[in-house]
Amino acid sequence: MSVMVLIFIMLLFGAMPAMGRRLYPPLLHADEDVRPQVVVVLGGGQRQRKGRWRCGVISLRRLQHGLALAQRHGLPLLLCGGRKHVPAQAPSEAALMAEEVRARDPGQRVWLEESSRTTWENAVEAATLLASRGVQRVLLVTDRPHMTRALLCFRAQDLEVAVAPLDRLPSSGWVPTAAALALIPEIWYEWLALLWYGLRWR
Image (tube, rainbow, N blue to C red; front, side, top):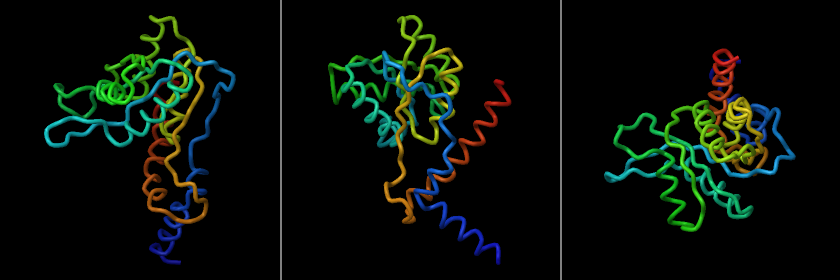
């Protein structure tokens, strides 16, 4: 079997949502009985368009998911994210997400964590802010591939963490899709990041 044929087969299987879900890092140690006091949404990037900074697509998806949960349960939102790979004068990810919240639901309670640049820093800075408000139990929102790493980082700060992952894979199981194929690099990145985090902070 030629290398090209082998690569084609691997990509074909990887493009199936059912196979992609089997590649996700497992969700270990998630607290199922936590009664959260706040919904924590992790930023997923920002972009500049026509001279104006806006939330990236991933940030918007996470925010929509987190805002719906906060509204349903009557909880405040903690929006996490600083400035990564953008000029110092650009708004933080958290500030951009807060603008979206105010436009959609002006009465929603919002707290901002604007210092972090990595998932580990998300957790450290969020834990400091939450401790000052007497909050220990959180409902964590991020994409499903990223959730394992985020969960471990937040638990390392002695927080009680329930999870509400956002699964971007299509619902169809065995029909190859471009969306599933595009997610494969992100999934493998998360496995490598888990290895790096494990070596650095074990």
